[in-house]
Length: 200
Image 1 (cartoon, rainbow, N blue to C red):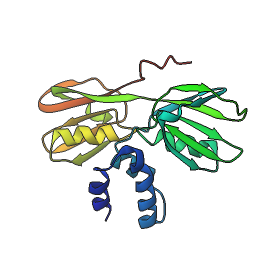
Image 2: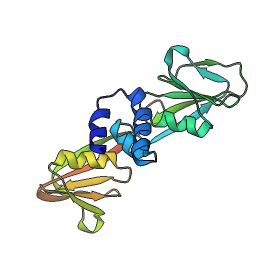
Image 3: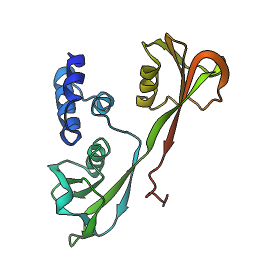
């Protein structure tokens, strides 16, 4: 049943995908499974938020408004929705507003909280005829292609490097230097913060 869920949700829009997926998975398994839905909806979990006092998002960028019990829950929904770039939370009525852009204006409501989201951007950089050191290997599994080996690493929070020997994918959870080896493909995950993030 879950394989069918994967195929169905891959075709859906990111704005609604995560919410629908979580509800469907919870109905099937009896519990939400955010990691599955994040993979299904093509979302990046490596996001941080920054508060901007006295502001609210622009109405034209509003993509969703919903009642949620806490600020943390509002942040959770934004961080797990690719289309969400900012959010606002009103504790007086427990309302969460999700926005598609960072644009904002001054807010008259004193307890309104506005946050901008920044997500780490990751990609896989491959090297032919190279492998990682054997004593650093964490996990090994069979995959049909180098591309699938890379994709599995890309979706895994812990995976940093993989190499593929034609049948098996070898995962490394820390950065390792490639060692020359004919017939093996090596790939490292490279992640950077967006250029608009200044670290403050």
